[in-house]
Amino acid sequence: MKTLHVELGDRRYPIHIGPGLLGRPDLLRPHIPGRQVLVVSNATVAPLYLERVRTALTGLRHEAAILPDGEQYKMLTVLDEVFTALLRHRFDRNCTILALGGGVVGDMAGFAAACYQRGVHFIQIPTTLLAQVDSSVGGKTAVNHPLGKNMIGAFYQPRCVLADTDTLATLPDRELSAGLAEVIKYGLIRDLPFLEWLEANLDALLAREAGALSEAIERSCRNKAEIVAADERETGERALLNLGHTFGHAIETGAGYGAWLHGEAVAAGMALAADLSARLGWLSEESVGRILVLLGRARLPSAPPPDLTADDFLRLMAVDKKVQDGRLRLILLRGLGQGVIADDVDPVRLRATLEVRR
Image (cartoon, rainbow, N blue to C red; front, top):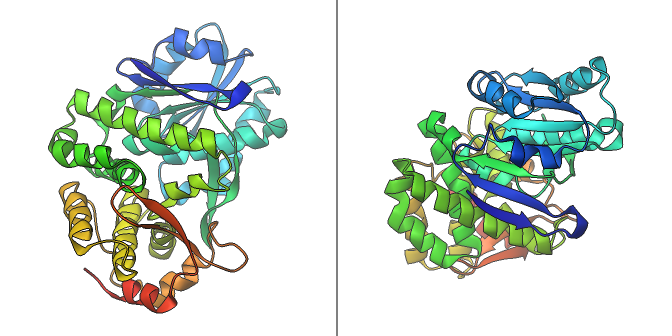
C-alpha cells in the first residue's frame, strides 16, 4: 500500500492506494467519528463489493442506498434517494456517508454529505480508474442539469480516500480507457516525464498489470493532491485540471448524458484543445500528433460526435463553470507538460477547431 496526503491544514486527509484495502477496518475506522454510516453505491458495484465494505464496518450501524448506474442518473431527483435513506434511518449530524463506486457515485454522495444537516462526514472508496485518479480526490461534488453538466454542487473534502486497485479487475475495458484519459491529462498539463512514462507503459496499463496501474494511480494522485493543496477552490492553478473538460462537457450534454463516458468526452476535448493550441502557434504539429497517437493507443476518441456542430459547441460551452463575466476560459497547451489558462481566445480560430474533424 502507498499513502499520499492532500495537505489542507487541519483538513489534511490520506489517499491509500493498493490491493486488498476494501475490507480493512484499520483504514476506515479512524475516519468515522460517529457510529452511523450510510454506504452509497450503485446497482453494478454493490453486488461486487458492498459486503466486503460492510465487514470493515462491523460494530457500527450501517445502512446502504443503492442508486441506478449511469451518468444519466446524476440528477437532483435521484440524489433525493440518498436524503430519504438518511432521514428514514434517522441519521444525525455525526454520521458518515461512504461513497462506493465510480465518479457518479462519488459526486452524488459527496454533494449529499455537503448538504445533509449542513455537512456530515464523508469517505471516498472509488472503484473505477477515473475515480481513483481524479474525481475522488479534491472535494469537487455535483449533479448535472439538463442544460449543463456539474452546474449544481459544492466543494466538500472527504476524510480519506481508499483506492483498492483490486476493484479494477472487474472494470469493463471501455471504463478502463475512459480513466486513462484523466491520467494522460496530468502528463499534458504539468508532468512531461509522466507523459513520457505513459507513452512507454500504455500497453502494460491496458493489460492491467498491477505495478503499472499502481504507478499511474499514485503519480496521478500526487499531481492532483499538489494542485488541490495549492488552490482548493479553483481560483488559479486548479483550473488546469479542466484540460479538455469544457469541450468534453459540451459533448456529454449535447450527446445526452450517458451516451459518451466522461473520460471519452474529455479525450476528444483534449484533442480539440491541442488543435486550438496549434492554431494559436503554441503547440507544434508534432506534439499534436503525439497526443492523438497516445489517445488512439488508449482506445479513446480524438474527435467529437459528427452531428455536434460548431454552433452547438458554442451554445453549450456558454453554460459552463469556467465562464466568467461572460467570457469563456479554456485550458490550452503551450507545449507538452505546459497547461495554460486562456481568456479571450480568438473566436475565428476557435470556430475553425470546432469545425475540423481530424
